[in-house]
Picture 1 (cartoon, rainbow, N blue to C red):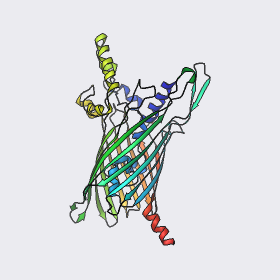
Picture 2 (picture 1 turned 45 degrees about the vertical axis):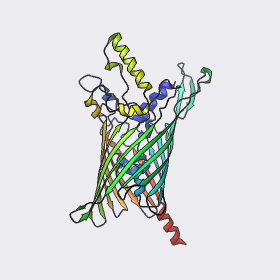
Picture 3 (picture 1 turned 30 degrees about the vertical axis):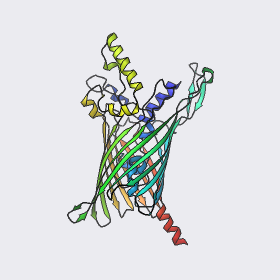
Picture 4 (picture 1 turned 120 degrees about the vertical axis):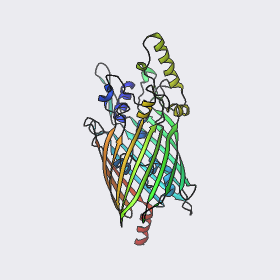
Length: 401
């Protein structure tokens, strides 16, 4: 029964194209990096998603907790809170969604530090199990959630760093009391560490902004739904990004960004990568056992040199995002982007569009995803984000008084 749920999770969360499985000269080169709690990798906000899932070095906002928490130290407002909702894989089902609540607060009078928090809830809808006889068994509502707290601080006028501590709970299984099985969920703890650098170069007579950012996220313990017999790595990820913003005219600006991502998770051994016969079988079993027993920290370093295809396959594990954001007077926004993942590592490739409108108190953002393959379950994904600016709310209340 639990195997069925794991299959549902793999299809729903990864959203990969199974047609790429047989790609490449008749060989099975489709070999994505396997992780647990993969919903942690889904972008929660419409702004970042509309730029091709980009945000390591963009201007700070309430959703920096996901992209790069060190940006909060450079946030313009004293505090902000955001709520987002993403209907997920609506081409397949209609009850899977991701909800996210994020916010931050600047500490002290020096404008140098901030605390932040976020709560994510990913629902896989309603799943009914059945026995081989066709009798309906249990009705389940599998979900994954995480709660985290962060702290960021400026270390100079141009550079800041941030840390985040995260609790994760994944409830994908169910209890079969008659079989003595009470493993219904898995917990994990993780941490992020990040940095952000921004400078203001002069290009001609115009002052521009050039920012760089990095974030190593979800460094933490493994998760397991069966008492530790099949542990899974968290989706530890290295994100590097840069964004260049320049004025087009009075009140008009354009930002161009690039993010590069790599999962810091070792590739799970496959039987097909080893020779036939007893010796190949023994080598595969030993490698698989080493992979299961590998610590998360060792896995981070192993992830740079473990792909069976060598350096060529390691390059395949690098994903990138290209994005642009046009702003008029920081009140109206148009965005576009592109996300690329190698066809043998998941084959997620899509364009994205979005827009936003901001008043003194509230900002509304929306995004729309267009997968390059019409059969992709990620095609036509919508996201909506609502942000409340506490400075604007305070000024509004002050005026009313």
